[in-house]
Amino acid sequence: MTGPDRPVASDFPGSPASSGPAVLDASAVLAWLRAEPGAEVVESYLEAAVLSAVNLSEIYQKLAQRGVDADRTLRQLRTLGIGIEPVTAADAVTAAALWPVTRTAGLSLGDRCCLALATRLDGPAITADTAWTQLDVGVTVVPIR
View (cartoon, one colour):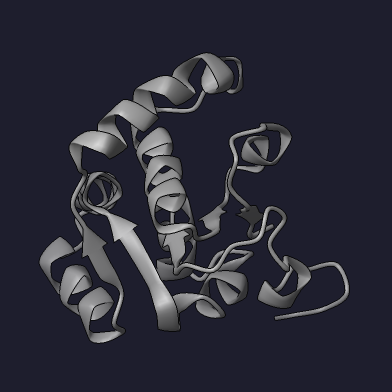
């Protein structure tokens, strides 16, 4: 459901300007898979989205915890055209460099890997974690709710 109180892709023109693909955080993908609030925002980005391999691992773990077939979910994500990006050495360095800026907000290594990938690809980071919007990390952060 979209409405005046729900953010949509067009609400975030990219400040700073983003020209790359949307980078999905595990929280955003899980919200979409579970049809939680904000799922429609995630859906608006799926056509040109990527996911860090680290965030894929987080998704697998959460699904396995709930007894869901994670392999089937991966096939579903690939069918939708969501790319799975490996973590490069540069991404690892960027994620580590983000720690001092993000530690007070409680961002995990997976969160920082998502932000590092968004930095590398010059795309917005899509997340359900609203704490990201309070951080100056050099990428556009799009909260889904």
